[in-house]
Image 1 (cartoon, rainbow, N blue to C red):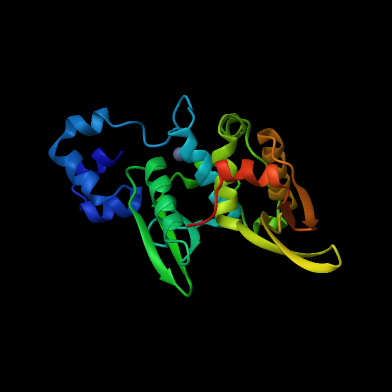
Image 2 (spheres, rainbow, N blue to C red; image 1 turned 180 degrees about the vertical axis):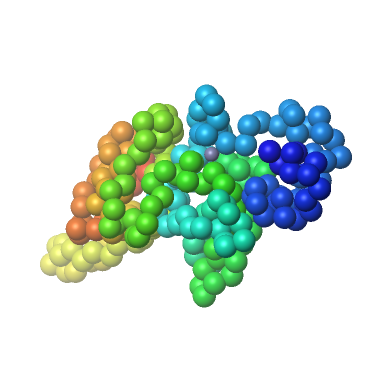
Length: 248
Ligand SMILES: [Zn+2]
């Protein structure tokens, strides 16, 4: 489709806006049409024979980030049918911003990934026609006000890469904190510190997905509040360290 638009004489800029394909890629296709023919179909989900998005581990991670703290909205009035995926990343964790950019780029390699500085956080965003195909949980209103269910094809990926999925969830809406507790021992008070994980989300559906995936990974957890999952047992924390790890 992009090639047909180029033949129609439209500028690369306007084709880029309407297809969500970045200009460098379009220029490359214009100068080397054989590459465009070889390039993979633009979207694995709306292809005639849908396939799973690749790389699947990056998809599982990005899905976790999206469900935790992402949002899909209309890309802009001038760009019909283009959607914007935004994931808010705290400035305190530059490593996570880089990982988010990398995963987004891996899933939509033809779309440009940008960052936008906000108060205390960096928004990682990318425009594409296909974000709603890739994340069908997209819908009007806040996530906790609507039903969030994985599609069967998403379950296939999450079941194959549960560690990447919880990593995404904990990197967006979770944290690894030090707990201080006081214990009375041999007549005096002593303080003990131990790490634990918290995943806080307002959507009971997303909490349930997190809990189910922790079960699959053999990580013990419980609800510490209505909207929070806590992983506090020493072996469970150690096991989750292997998948999620502290933020960095
Ligand atoms: Zn699509």
